[in-house]
Image 1 (cartoon, rainbow, N blue to C red):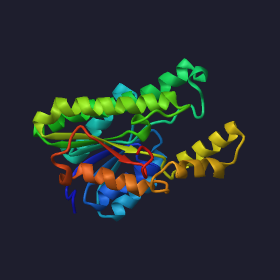
Image 2: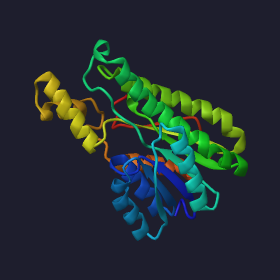
Image 3: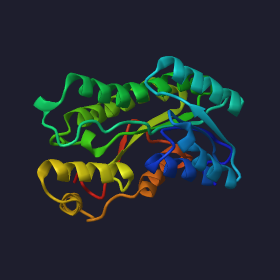
Length: 260
């Protein structure tokens, strides 16, 4: 197993990509601290982790709240015996859909930026000291291919994902001398409930059908198929393992060729 006896924190671990990532890391040998605001939604995922013979701990955490993140990391350290090997930042929000920039409220814009940037920064901030002390660690952020190209009518979300890339590259430079790898996986559209909501909302605003919006995404992809959560989880596993030991500060797009 590629992550035998490793300890991992996964934020936003309850659903979709977060759940797939959590279970993939566990299958490869990692014990997991699962975090989200809705801890009830984490219970089924934690149960699956334990069925795989790995330890799982659920910790409530609001990733934009400084005190909440600090407390979560302290609980994780206590659960893991003070050793955190892997941090995967999945938690985030989509924000306004199919909305031109002049119709996005300042409050909605700030909400997306805070959730997706501050919510990535704070877990990194509080996890890194123990990694630096041990001179070892893997951090994998979840960005998006909307952070690799412009994304019409998604100014807040696209801006936040561009910023995740900048944060990733800068942190990689800060901690490279300590043997810590920091990378970002950039999914395109992923087959999750969030995608269903996105397609339905786009269809509503445009006055078209869900199927038309869905097919539009498919036609934009070189491989003509929508990314599954497991595709993203496989990329995270690669970057969390020693297979990627000499890769840092990089973006790995998992989007079926949407950004080609």
